[in-house]
Image 1 (tube, rainbow, N blue to C red):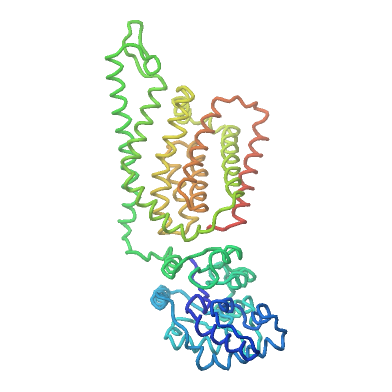
Image 2 (cartoon, helix red, strand yellow; image 1 turned 180 degrees about the horizontal axis):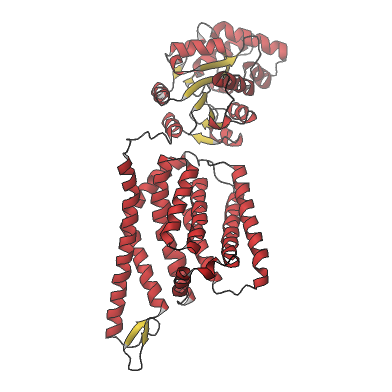
Length: 498
């Protein structure tokens, strides 16, 4: 959660269209330029006025400065109040202020005008610092304004840019923030629009004051606060329900298979029979299918809870994933998954962990006793989807509401590891569990951890059928881990999710 919030004024807190555009119209008229269409003057909202006069009307520095003076002639008494607050702004500022956040205004408009506007709308009281440009034409660039705002906001303390958002509607707000190493939140309800903010590479984009408030408050438990017991219940109840129904489902499926096997002849695909045709036991296919039936039953049992939590998480995440992810991010995710799957499995083989774990050996023997397509279907697809509904769909979604994202990822990975009940699968499950939570957070799409989990299970299962020359273990292990780590580093470099 970031608690130092820098707001642009025009197009972010207030809609100044009438005042700014009519004052620009007034200034242009003094040069003999008639511009009756105020819509054409909207690009003046946001950037420094002098730059806009030069850019849109070809004025030189002297002419542009004279136009600014004419603009201010009308603005200082009339245009300044031809302005209005966007709906919901006072309420949002009041809420943010009550949550202990430090608010500031960082505007390219002269400071004296910014203060008058904020006082006129009775919202100046919410801001710890108010910074704008100077009337003499200095400190008009947005990066200069942001820098001065940060210095005043933090005082003698070191500026912690990791705790700061710059919030604005134009590319200048985004670019100014990025020069200072600050993340920028673009708002499309102002005058920049979605395409301008995307082009400027805004870190986050919201479409309304309501979405902005929700985004800034995420992690502060804006909703009704739950007791510790209620939070624990959100985690423990689905976990117990899942494991209980999974076991019941497995036993019921086994009883059905036993009944079928006792009353029908044949069925070598599922049943082991003695010379007289009597049922002696189940094949690996039957055991894996019964296990898959248990997982399906468990998935159905928690589907209602999962649907609700996944929907709530999707609502929270959509504010951070309005920008479409580039294709290279999907390639890097796949590269990281493949690297970790190969590297970790081979590492566990090389250090002797697999040979030393009798529990894992028994699990692996049972899983690989099935026909390959059956094993891939049961273990690679059904089990993976069912477990994701629980561990990322419900548990991680709960953890991320009450703790830092990095801690939530570790917690969901740790529970995933303990759930497997043996050291070999536990180590693998912990790393992959954290990675799958990271994929969920990075892309904001529940399908991503599901696909990674399926890929992990399919490849890990398939590796049991492939003979890899022992001499290749270490080279492939190191290559896999380097590939996985490097891909994660590249993803994190492009976008930080925690």
